[in-house]
Structure formats: structure tokens, C-alpha cells
Image (cartoon, rainbow, N blue to C red; front, side, top):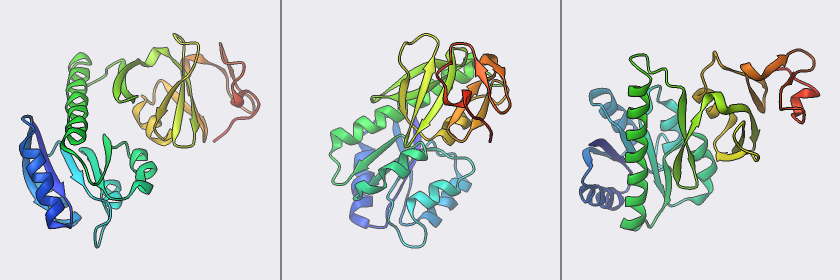
Length: 228
């Protein structure tokens, strides 16, 4: 069961969200909030797994609210504005829905959230009490792909995406995520950010300074110039 809240300053939109949520068996609506401040209060009082939130709201926008959360539940943005999608995905939201949203599209986003929650639970269990798993999951083409940390050679930031270069693949994996968000997903004792746009597996590092090199990475840009 995913405990969720809906946040929208428009009563009709908030009512529609509540109606949709009631039709999803694994969702339980804990509160409907007309602004981000009411939502923040609910988060202080209850354990929430998933937030459905609009962007344009008075006082504090949905994006500002998401950024303000130190402990962030999963988020599905439901908005009338397509233009904020890059900012939303930079915050690692589960999905970005543009109004009007049909029930089928809403269910697809909710299924993705449920699958992500299940995978996170499984990863924590596999990693033991300290949650030290040797892998993580990334959203690729509307599915979640398991990536082993030891398989990663280096990661390259490219606008709203990152390219993950793997030992097991001839071509890099393209994922919609910021380089900063990717850095947060990788264990600090196994990866180092050698440039604003590049993260390198420490195990692959052979030399680090004005120039750096690693096995199987002769074409990497940091081989010419590195530094934070």
C-alpha cells in the first residue's frame, strides 16, 4: 500500500485526483491539500510514500516545494504546463502528467511508482541492515533497469540526460537525469566526480591530476583536462 497526498489549488482538479486515487487498489489517500504549506504539515505528521502535486500554486510552487524537502517521498507532477518537464525530471520525479489526464495514463504513472517502491524495498533487503546494495535501479524507456555499481566505468552529463558507460555494453545507456542527481545515487566510496560533467568509478581510475586516465576509457574527455 502506498500512502499518498494530493496537492492542487484548484478544487475541481483536487477532486478529480481524489477520485482517480480511490480507483487504484494500492493507493491510500491520506490528505487533499490546496497549497504546499498544508502539504508540508501533513508530511510532518504522517509517513507519506507518494505525492501528487500541481506546479503553479500561490505562495510556493510545486517545484519549490519538492526542492525544499529534505526527506522526499516519490513525486508525480500533475500540471497544465509542459514547459516545466525538464525541471521536474531533474528532481527525479516518478512521472510528469499534463492535464487533462486520463485515468489510463494516471494508472500507468501509479504502476510505475508501485514498481519503484517494490524495487527499493527489495534492494534494501538484499543489501542487509545497512542497505549497502551493490546495485540500483534507473528509469529507462518507462521501465526500471537494474544497474550493478561494479559494471559502471564512467558517467557523462549531457543536458537533461546522463550517459552511463558500462563494461557490459558497447554503447552507453541514456537516462533522463541530471549529473547531480546521478552523483547522489552512487556510493561516494566507489565513485568520484572528476569534472562538472563527469563521474568516474574509482576502481577504473589509474591517474588523477591535471590529466587522468583509466582502463577502457581512452576516449574520455577528462583524459585531456580534469578538475572540479
